[in-house]
Image 1 (cartoon, rainbow, N blue to C red):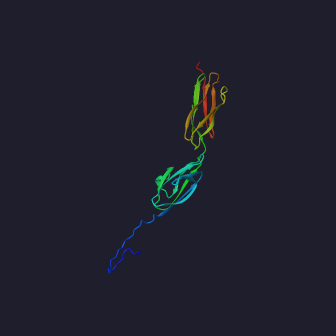
Image 2: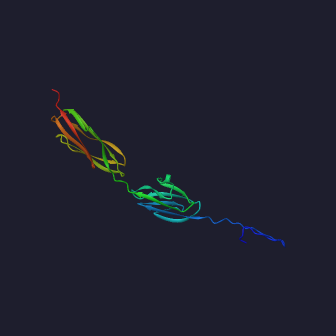
Image 3: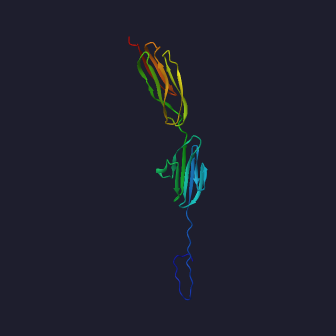
Length: 212
């Protein structure tokens, strides 16, 4: 009965039926893990978890979405993933074989404020002129934060000035720190500087006498 080919001898009338059935579909396993602070949204079945294992019928398409926790950020997929999709936060995979996939998460680098420009850094003026001191600061780190930028000088009539800046990652901002009035300053050479976090810049101010 199970042979695909049979031979029959007709010594009497016979009634024969060939029976066919669809084969059972192959089952493949999907394993999903995470490294770092985050979960993966998996659909179907529509869950978010840090570790997952389940069998699906061959050809099933599953959507995987990286879900970072807190201030963590997605760092990429590894395992049985198309290399061109490794940096996509959401991917779709079709199970034509078992797959083992890991979502990687990392903590962003802390804020790092750096002085991009100090203007004017070195300047020569005539007594009585005013100097507008500005600074451009950039956050080269990976998190938003607030820092204090400080202007200091040994010019007797100038006090220390502080400005608070809040910058997102890769954001840059210019700020006026002070206006130096040299009308009461004795002609001489002075020092001035700006600093923020671990970044600082030093400059010179030369005040010349008024023309006689």
